[in-house]
Image 1 (tube, rainbow, N blue to C red):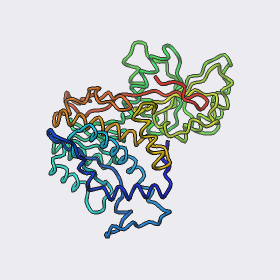
Image 2: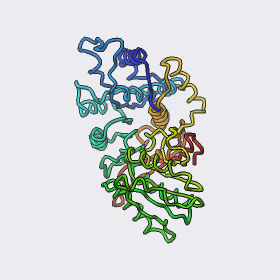
Image 3: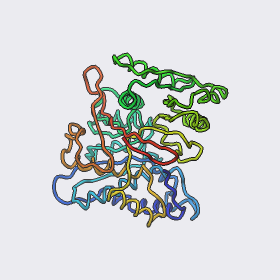
Image 4: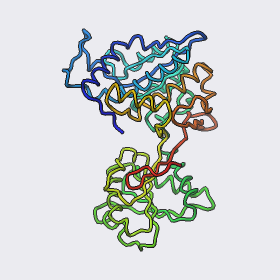
Length: 395
């Protein structure tokens, strides 16, 4: 879901951030040993304000590139408020990764000088590569909050990937299929592209490790003729089970629409997509008749008290619904703020626990390379099922 903020409310949010920026960077706790955490997120403050501190835009315009960073910042700030109410003694620093005045390296140096022990990063892949390297050098834990990539990090026990990599996603999907559809033939639809070739190779490699391997049938769809042929020759008594082995959401939409047209040719029809399918509007009537399954590491039903409070806050203050990024930032800041307060610099040895959960579970495990910890990664995935536009079940 996208956060849609009216321009005047969005400007108010940005102005409020700018005004309270200094005070929020040291969120107040009470008593006990104080630990320090930093949030890195793209705010583009220099794009919105001039050197005199005046807002550059009119009352009806807004720097849209700031929305992602502001969503993450706002979720973190709400978590900071919750931690303060619990008297958790933390200092929290906010850094704008798109600052024109300081490089990422300069900002990190400030972090290290201030004694920051944990960084939660909503950053691009190139920025994460830099933060991971600097974190290893200074022994500061860096949490990659959003990008499903390990940033080519090796021998770095201070780097944590919260959004599982495509390798992990495929391994877990393989196990899901093996458990849920034993003995079934699975048709994997791909096209001719490097990422699709990789997806196929992972499935084929995993199949070599099991006595009862999955019966995969790989089918390439590279043109409109092959696309229109999908689902047209199946007997009505058969159940169709397909994996769409492509990260390309536009390709996924075409496959979904085509199968929806042919859904009456099946007794039942299930399409399992890649994690990128969270960016497809599965409530559209174009996909009627198809059961759609895909995975996500950050599912939140938004029925708990904290979720209801955040939703109500956004509705009253910004006339909008909070995005998934708001809840992710809240959940990570809340949990790791607690862990940092409890364990301090020893936090890396306590990542696998389940305490201080907010909204979604985590399953953080070390990934090894040559017997050493390469990095840590969250392996938890939820499987969402949509049918005729409605969320049917979560496993």
